[in-house]
Length: 90
Image 1 (cartoon, helix red, strand yellow):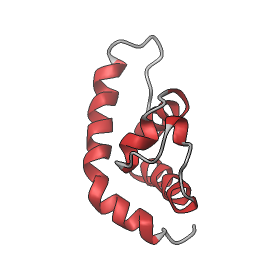
Image 2 (spheres, rainbow, N blue to C red; image 1 turned 180 degrees about the horizontal axis):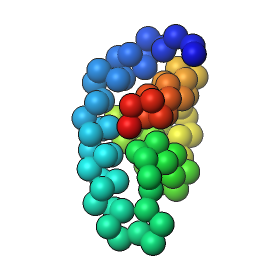
Image 3 (cartoon, rainbow, N blue to C red; image 1 turned 180 degrees about the vertical axis):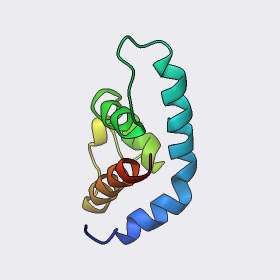
């Protein structure tokens, strides 16, 4: 496993509320789905592919536009670390 990026460590500390919120949304949304998500990781990956504002919300960065356009390399690396975090802990 690679060492987390500095941006990710900052991101993780500042945005754990986003993970908690995503977990709450997952539980709420699963009530209405025919095939509910089993993990927060699945929910995050689905949202990244289907919600144009997901990355703007995740990084709280208005410079990141629809579907992650304009993400820096550091943000892309942080997103990959974020998904790994979800896989390991949620």
